[in-house]
Length: 255
Ligand code: F6P
Image 1 (cartoon, rainbow, N blue to C red):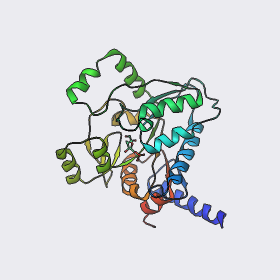
Image 2 (cartoon, protein in one colour):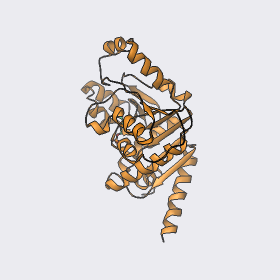
Image 3 (tube, rainbow, N blue to C red):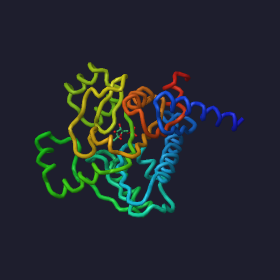
């Protein structure tokens, strides 16, 4: 029975991989919108995937969020790759300390004996202030490191939920609704077709930098995120997806 179940998960993974032209899809059992153990399993699977992707001198950028916090929790053990650097993909969002990109980056680095650098600034600053901060020599140095990353590990969020978490103005929220935004990554908002319909200014990896990445690992699960995940994948059409059965079935409209 267990073998039959695992085979079903493998079939779902193959279907997702084909539908979105992905390099690899890893599906853990359960639905993390209802079951916290499914989210922990996603974290474990993504941590393993990241460890296997590391190589000498590679630079890894990570986002924040509760799912990435689980990835950080699960990172441990020996890594043979040398001179690995881990950085946050963008400035912090505030909120729970464990969920901040800086903390996720530092945790992962410490767990595998890698180096890390942090971006000490909030993500939701006024644009003019942001532009001046980008000129600061120390910030510039870290931002350049972030932009030169080879591997990105990112979470995916439901657009309106993330906008609320980021304290977007009522006008901004209305624009998102009008433009049909369903998914969010790195403060870019995507509609169902995978087009970027809105972006919030920030510091760190920009959408244009994504092309230079060697590997992108998207980590997100839960049937509640199905539409968001599908929207983002429709845009990316590359990389690895680590998700759960709840999201996978709903994306493929099977549950
Ligand atoms: O804020 C960082 C971030 O990775 C967002 O880009 C993403 O939408 C969100 O976190 C996912 O958070 P969670 O894993 O808590 O759902």
